[in-house]
Length: 250
Image (tube, rainbow, N blue to C red; front, side):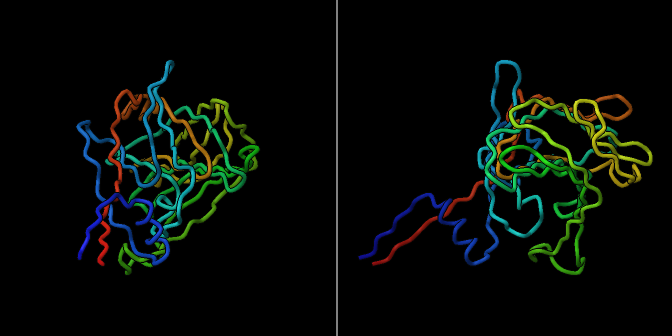
């Protein structure tokens, strides 16, 4: 007698992928809203607040898939690239950290998921402790995109800087002709010497690991004019959803 059991297998599927290193098969959730963001990993939820709307990651942890550094974190990025920008601004609050390896990244100038620059925040359960400026690049261009760990992340500059949890911060990435600056509450924290043409176009987004960041009021500017605004009044995320069927034979 043959019985067929059909059920949702999201957790089982991911465990099997982790054990056997099988690239996961993703499908995209349908949504009537116009898509602006692509959720690469994580459970990003749009929340309607009393003072402002925000997006928060509910997943906290992530499996290291190994295809790129973005999917190794909980990440969302813009679907379409922005041709030119000289400022990325947003508000953020870091909440509910785990004990160690707490991370937050602002990837920008994303050409593809393995090619980007980012400001990376690293800390523990007590605070963010340092900030890096990093570059992700492809190791071997001749290999297909399905090859794991065919990318490298270089730490170009770092600074020790403490940021507390559960406090609102206003952050800006400011791109000038020969330098790029991370400002926190309008104060320069990390300045790097990188030509504007290296970083002033492409997709951008946010990544986290081992905490829940709240992000709101995103504005991308060029010559003091807004080229991209997001107030999360609508849920415009294209999310990854994994589904499957389990068959049992007797």
